[in-house]
Image (cartoon, rainbow, N blue to C red; front, side, top):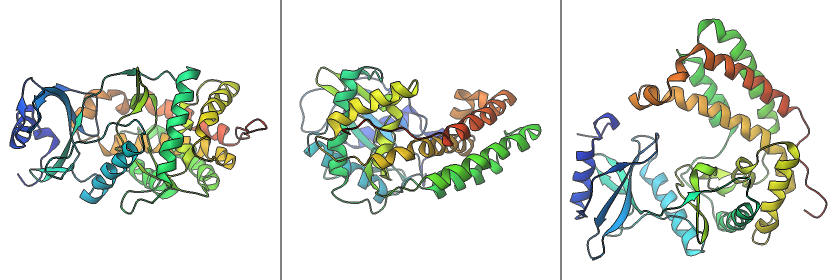
Length: 331
């Protein structure tokens, strides 16, 4: 086949790809939680390494990233690892980490176990702040040439075009939903004016962060791109405004030992939240033809979901019009 279709990406296909690399597979495949890619864990032995280990294989969704974009992700991961930033990096085989198969690409990673990071645990947030400071220190050292950028065009305007064509939005909700959507887009676009763009993790939330005896570590830089530093901090903030400020200052106290932070970026938090919210809805609409999405997100095609989204957008418009978070003196 010219390029594998995810519907045709069976465990047998995955095993065939691994065996072509010369891996000795010692177990079956265990599917891991991923909708954008196809990710499996297994036990096996790499050529030249006598020990059997646990590995994770990730098959990238075709046509999402180019070879150059995938290579930049892997190169960034290795830069971080070399700078002692705790991240799970892909394995290179015969000088390649982006591995071709049947017109697509996959990668192999060592499996590292851990528990979910607790976003209300101050000690863990302090450690995370330290690692994010080091990550951004590396991120500032050069720019991506091929990876995309967080932008109003990509996350708001293009998402709006996708939603305009989305048949799951019920006719009786069209007016209320798009009125709220357009108001949020207009306000977020006005406020999203970043002064500096660096290489960031891009999707730094609790689902992509784990902790073990050595502390927090990062997995999945699949969404790394150019963006403002606050993009990797704001998703760790939850609760009331006072709680958010406490969590932010806890992270920044360690973060700023390695990387300067511009407090003006706090004005970008609510626009970025709006961008993520709208981009997420459009992502589900883009992927709806994938059977896995209809099976795992059945609520996306219900009237109740779109009624809720219209209300959520109105709430987000209210938040966009509130004063941004402000750090205490000394930060």
